[in-house]
Image (cartoon, rainbow, N blue to C red; front, top):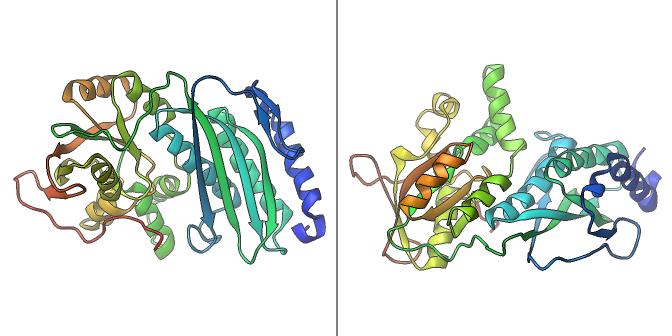
Length: 330
């Protein structure tokens, strides 16, 4: 049945029932009112509150030829949870605004919400409300609200000259996955599965962000725009520059083998990995590398320089140039 046949309130009832049946909102005892009233309502604690919002628009951020509705649901919530991770917080509530063509199948929207419910359950997020409107193409806007239990926040503006630069996980895997899907590249099933998962099923680093806070890190960002672009955000906000050793950048062996010379370009400028890029003194980062379960790689150093200036070198100290610097909307 198409959403135009089901109607706005019929669709809301369908999604409300899915959320109720999944019982995800029971994990949030402070939620007083969820879907069905003029607003959601919850009791606030004294912790610092966090809020983030992101929009995914059809044919700009995704195409329905390369992503399933369930994957779109997972990803649209995951990228917002990742912002909370980058601040060192915990996610609590989500609000979802959908803009849909009237010929959209209601089962597709149910699939979208199945994906959201899957990740909401994993991260204990209550889907507390939203909005539905008609549009010429699909748009999914998600707001996530969270908090910092110890009132310590990771920021972009606190990097200092002499800080070590480190990153969780791998860089470039999501961009490689997008490249594979867009160009319909053929790889063995194991490679295809890894690359597709990296792009369509990002895993927010909530636990890792909390550990950064616990072990004295104050500066972080998630790598949504690309390693270079996001490091530049830190440097500009902090009034510093950076030196990066490109040979140290963690690129998965699958990406290296599949994309050869292009792997470094994907790692530096690809974006959508949703890893945590952070800076701190060498002692604290050494502690982090011992306690975090995922790989943590040191890739360079913060330096006194023109704010936002990033210099790239290979292991031999030779300058490295790259063409791709990250994602922007305009």
